[in-house]
Amino acid sequence: MTRTEKLLTITKRLIIMTSSGLLLVVAIFALTVLRGNRLMVSWACFGCGLVGGFVSIQQRLKKFGDEELDLLSTSWFQILLIPVYGGIFALVLYLCFLSKIIEGPSFRNLPVCRSLNRFRLRRILETISRKHIPLLAPIWRSSCSGHS
Image 1 (cartoon, rainbow, N blue to C red):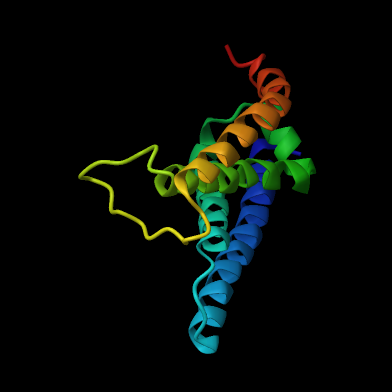
Image 2 (cartoon, rainbow, N blue to C red):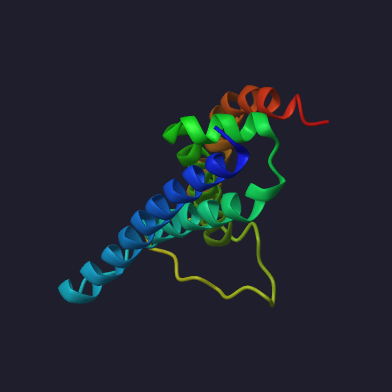
């Protein structure tokens, strides 16, 4: 398979996955509006992170080497993995805003549910960083080791 064919294959998959992600985000917003319920910001945040991850892959696609193109053109999982990281980090950023770890005049004060206080949100963030980030570190190191 030539480089152009690999790029076309990856681009088609990205279009399908980005469209699915956008439909998911629109569906969440539509259900919220139609039912008159509160918006589940965490789901919308994760969906927006997914779409951002797909856009990120598309923008960097031209700079990928042949090995990365081989991997992405043969595996749906690899195409989905990077946007899932984007969704997770979007949720972590949202939690940082809620817990007021990140605050200042540039950031709007978000209303926090009464049952969630600052201490509980910080504990959630500490648990995520302690348990899950070390699990992902070997994956990041192995995927970045050949890109010095």
